[in-house]
Length: 413
Length: 156
Ligand SMILES: Cc1cc2nc3c(=O)[nH]c(=O)nc-3n(C[C@H](O)[C@H](O)[C@H](O)COP(=O)(O)O)c2cc1C
Image 1 (cartoon, each protein chain N blue to C red):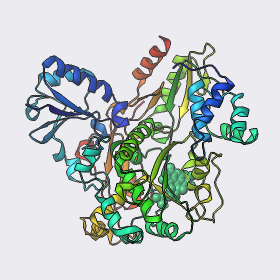
Image 2 (image 1 turned 180 degrees about the horizontal axis):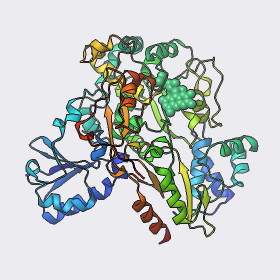
Image 3 (image 1 turned 90 degrees about the vertical axis):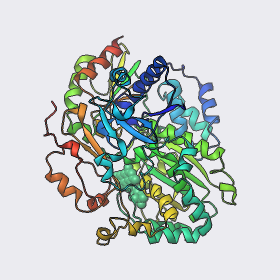
């Protein structure tokens, strides 16, 4: 019998709630029981109130248990966690994870792999559709990529909602021997953590998106400026970049082509203002994070004075999907009809931190779904004491309450 | 966390190992901080000379960024998130409790060098807030009990 796959997330939120000690306990219990397991540290599914969410695979189906604490592990194992995960009778059992109402109500694009795969495994990434976007980008060539991104209607996720295609076209058309791709991973606004989750849960997607951006505008270097408060995101990204380089996805010949692209993670230093794009560029240059006067735009005079694309993490991670499935994919999905009313045609992700119980059971969610007004509904719903939006674009998002947040609110004191 | 004692030599070594980078100053300051536990005043002229910058420029950068503490921290560093999401679930009560139990105020190091208590602004753990970082380890769903455990760990 082959090893039983057991998943324990490596997302910072899961770790902050004890995932590492749960993983250790699972390994030790498996050893005691003489069961051969393969422990996978996946990203988070976004059901943060269930973290650490342990999953066990049986016959290709993943059964979930959460929130698991170290002290629960022995009882779960005794109840059949490894041998019969489908029929474990325990308070923490949530059944088949993919059938959870929170997940079935969503259509995930950027976060499709997050929580499913091992974020540090390139093989996993490739097996789940990774680098298909790059392959198509290489077929299309620079102008074709810019046209595709423009056609998709993608708008920046960093706050201003600026059309990404137009930004890219400006840098594409700018003259310059050196151009840069900069990813804004400063995610400074409290209550937002979708950038963090995707960097920790699917780092190759960001690497692929930035590589495509480089090929689109003729940039050979990229920087990811990540806030220092995200040490797990930084180490995951660095590991993934090393793997991508070792496998020819980064370096002097991307995928064996004539395109070169190098990528580096730079750590912020605790200055909120560095999320603003021009002060971020100053900071990358090694200066104080002071805002620059505009114009000139970073697209013309950016990092070290060179033409520069600066985009948010979620703008760049949307790109592989746009290229792989085509710009029209954005329009033909379930929300396309409603999307027609808005100028932005692309779905956005929202981070939500809601509290309907004391902190030990605080709940949160990641959505990839659009329609009515998140802000109004959230404001109206007294159940949500803190609702996070990382961009005005979330105005267009619908906030669908998972069935598990039905409990009445209680103040934490 | 063990740190090395400051020396010009070691600082020069750190600088030279970063010279291949574009815009190396922030990575250098991070490395200096990691090596010595803080960014000593005496490191500024060394870095400035090696990078061909003025002392004022390097000083300006060091003082701009919150992460570059210019005095050594305590043996333990407790950072509690005070950003909006954590505030909305009552972190301020926990901060008061931590200050009382540790015997230091926010932003201070205890006189015996045992512990530094600092605010941090958003660890992205908003869905399991309140959150903290203790000696680099992140902790979510913080409550009074968790603070007591942190205090016990620091006192050990
Ligand atoms: C004070 C301030 C803070 C900002 N913080 C962030 C941030 O943390 N992350 C981000 O992506 N954009 C932030 N922005 C927006 C950026 O300036 C910029 O619009 C964005 O990086 C562009 O990327 P996009 O086109 O992909 O949205 C901030 C802007 C201001 C004025």
